[in-house]
Structures are given as C-alpha cells and as structure tokens.
Image 1 (cartoon, rainbow, N blue to C red):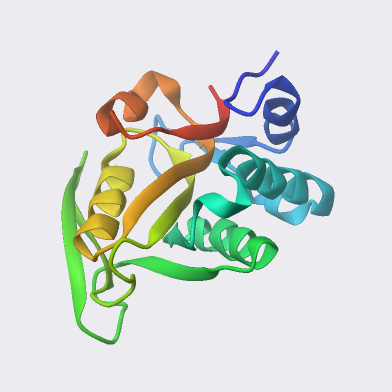
Image 2: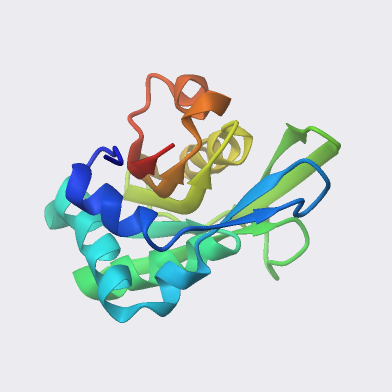
Length: 181
C-alpha cells in the first residue's frame, strides 16, 4: 500500500498516475513523471485538495511554486484558496530586483531567485513543488522565501523520494508529501 502524509488513499491516487521513465535525464536515473497526474482532472483535483486540506485554508497568505512543475501546483492551490501565487525561478528569468540562493547539484551548481519584494514582511507562504529528492532545491526555495521577508507556513510536494534524504535536510521545517517512495 502506498504511503504519504495525507494517508494511503491519497498516496495511492498519486501513485497510479506516476510513470517511471528509465535513463532520463541521464543514464542510470529513473525519472518519476507526474505529467499524467496533471492531465487527469479527478486525480489532479484530489491532489490539490489534499494539499489544501493538510495545511488548512487559513494557514497561508500566498503560495510559492518552484520552477517549473511547482508553478502548476501553486497556481491551482492559489486559485482554489483565493490567494496569490509567487514564482521561484531559475536565475535570470525575473525582470526586477531579486534575492538569489545557489545550491549544489551532483553535476554543478544552480541558482534560484524571487523578486525582492515578492512577500510582505511576515507573510505566511506555502511553498510547493512536484518532487522532493535530495532537498537542495527545496532548501534554497525556503531560504529565499525567508530572505525576501516571508514566513514559511508549510512545504508540500506530490512525491518524495524518501531514500534520498531530502526531508532530513529540511529539518526542522515540516515536509508534507502526498506520496513517499
């Protein structure tokens, strides 16, 4: 039975929409493709509703989505809750003054940015992304929110690759994953 922080039924609903793609983006990697979940109206609605139910509508003021699939999730959560959405982008994609955070990848380094004025001081921010792996992207994103004046109200992903230790890297911040494998 699939496991996740919103219970086995939600985890199973996500799991049935995940396709394994071998050797992508490079040889030896098993890519977890979540686009079938995005394409299924019932499955996608259940996933978004589960994120909202877990955190509670009143627990956040704005949703931040991590590039790129996190944008899809963030927009849906924001729309369903009547809040705004803020993109956490790859470096060089935002037109105004930004705050940046760099993090290590297995093959180099990457940088994420948000607009310096993206959040009001103390604004409660729900950060969402599609997958939590080693936690580098998530850690950089959460740090950016805080450095830009927001307060992390929660962090949710559709899928957590638990064997890579991302949750432990983000501690003591709470992590919410609909499906953990």
